Length: 258
Ligand code: SF4
Image (cartoon, rainbow, N blue to C red):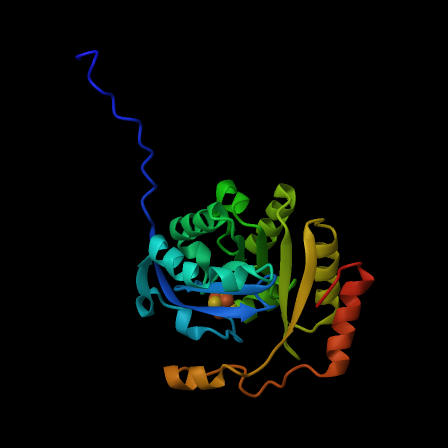
């Protein structure tokens, strides 16, 4: 080589954007993490929860492909709005861990650009979340739908153990976590199961709060439009007494609830 020849400066190519399939995105306040959230609903879920509010996300084939770069551009349009009150980006679904590369890349890009990140998951596919992905996740919203394996299977069609394993792993990694629990009268309200869940959660050490989410039937119209039966169409929402009892059960184990 001619020693006088100019050597071009080293270039760091940006990592190629990952492609995923999403159902939609939306803005929400208060329920999907702190502050105002830009929520990405990924497509595809291996569970079929009886009370699922997002049946349109169940199948990958019903979503549309998008790159993480395109999602970041969309997020950029709302950045000032979501950051002004300590909000951020939440990846939900569907089940985001069904598309681990896309989810990891999106979390990483958000974190890199200074946005608070949250991952909403059932934990069934927790083994697909790498430690690096979890390091890019400021908050995990972990849905534990029952502490009874039989009830969990009845509610979701899947096994409980992977979710509990994932919860313990998050605790070992010290990742801040909110547990989400949907209270359905006659289905998830067994006092012994709730005591078991409260004891389990209180022993983890990384759980900031449990969101007790009262079952409701607002998705009935969605099911009708999709031509799907809504299995809990005749189930009432929990009354005040039941809600108070369940909150109290968590509090007695020292677990804050909302
Ligand atoms: S895990 Fe979530 S998206 Fe999947 S079926 Fe259950 S409620 Fe619906």
